[in-house]
Image (tube, rainbow, N blue to C red; front, side):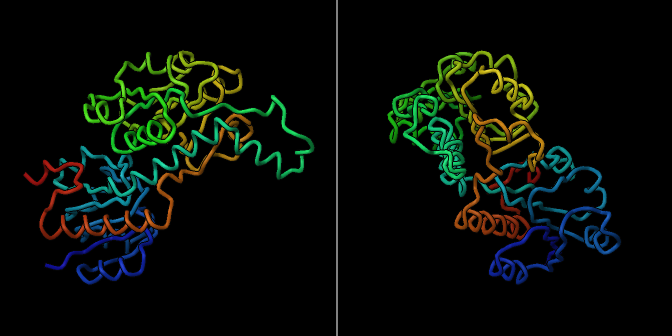
Length: 324
């Protein structure tokens, strides 16, 4: 059987060719039905979707009665209505594991940049304001030997913890839905409540997916439980943090600073107060943005799509129950 696939994200040329060898591929820039009849017609016949960062819910799925697989080029899948997909027997595939180490590198970059005020002092140097030896007003804080609290000790959280413990001799606290005996044994991580983690950590690192339970997990009350010299690092999902509460905490010295790669609204609006705060390091959602990792993610997404279409393989499937 030849499958009809809608591709809505650029793929490396060799991966596009591979997909085209097995499927009839139609390329669109988005999954917006407003593109007109060609898109609606292609969607009606589509067995598979492959791309990233597009909302897929009931309205779109109503136009895709033959859809069997959606393959996202990401580990996160909060832009999909998983319940709707599952109810219609559509498999949702994602790309875990291949981006773990790269994202952990980026998160630890944020830890170092916030503590040592690297972005702020880089800008000072660029503007020609470095005219004498730096004084205490420009000092940062040490990272080695401090306490790193990780909220969400999955693959990426564990990789961050490993860097902190083995590379910087940090004490590791973690809060998770379930305890990780392996992390406790291998890197001495200690499980604790969220309140205890917030109170005792010098760096609070968020690596949780977005869900009803984690939305605004960190708000004004939680920020108030952190040390005034502590830093908040968010490498998970933007809406996990109440952004306005964070802005107020940074402005008022409730915490020392924040390192952010994700936001409530992306791209971050140009008038966001976060962009004018010297104690906020703001990156444009680059957790997995290296040549090597983005290729590996695209390759895995293609593999996932073809395996699910051809064999109903549930490897890397978010909702494997649809196969049963």
